Length: 517
Image 1 (cartoon, helix red, strand yellow):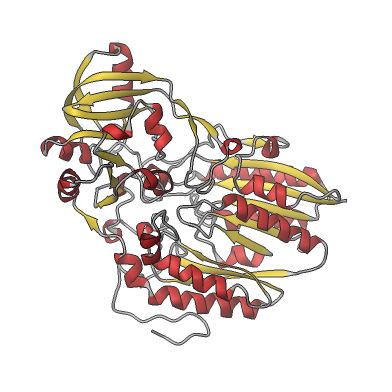
Image 2 (cartoon, one colour):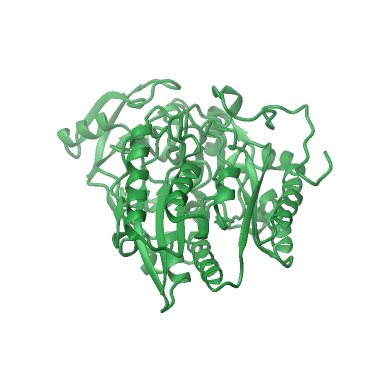
């Protein structure tokens, strides 16, 4: 009987976010809970399916899933990594270890390479010959240290990410082949000096004509052809994460081969060069406009379905506070009507609950958590709805499942108490205690009827597209303020590796084994 441990640690760290992270959320799982409470159609559930065989004993250790936020405090990181390492030690003999990681987790010094440190500590317990196989989010910032400790890596190929289950499944199948002695994988990464933007890194779209324009869609066709090369087990383009201030935050290519590190470097380098040559396309494929211009464009739309205004700078998926009123202020000033949007503001939620449905509130709203980039605004509105924030995500959804959604993959969530305030000419604002969802089920559960709306504002980058694109007439990307601004040059970087495009433009670059361009 072969014994395989399962370990999860998931956090995408925005080092510019105001709120540091002191705790994992309610999804913390220990022991058998890691399997029994695994999110349907995600990395861990996929791995469990892929490695399922009568001669395999799964040894679930822990799944530590932090809420979105800023730097992880060093003592908090030590506590949870210590919990994992203790679990590994108590498990005694292990023949393999699977890690479900985000890959962009950053803790305070000396743990800035948080996942690399986790792998190192587990390696110190299990020894040099136990294979490590890992899945990663598309926006990971994989270090060379991690690659040296891993046998195989299977990051998301998709952005928005809809292939978590499939990647977990592949990781499980790979682990079986390793344990059977059929392969001996090695993994290498080549970093490409490009930082974002995420909206230019989409790998797919619902509309075929839009999909064909996407540079990463085209790059993935090259990747798929290269992946057929004998000896290559996996090849993935990684988006990097521009809001984690580390030397590895850029885009990259990771390659896993069957015992051939030189082939891994060659393949990753060749694909990295293709990525580099498409840097202009990645930057420009999806235009970004000012808030006022975007609001005017949306109001002038003549389509039958809503337009989505994308609040890029205050994306809760990038650990922002999600409390900016900047777009709402512009909607009001331009006389927009039939709009729906979300703002995190516990003060409004408490006031709305106290006043009751039908009551009129006049108060300052927004910037309840972070006032570095924007300030509160004064509004007057009527309380239309109060609820507890329980709803079901039916999908499709970024981070989970794909375009065809089966009922068994539905997910119940609780985002905490919410109040809907109607402001002006049918502008419905969903105020929440915590960061809001970016799926259409979040809006529907708060009473928003999309057929009655002309404009929907989503605090997102592109994750919402998996859910919203089938029901809207388009997206307008707004250059909004916040800790996930697309103006990277405005952020106080100290540790990223320069030069880095497009912050720097006057330089040439070539990966290992490839000429400069």
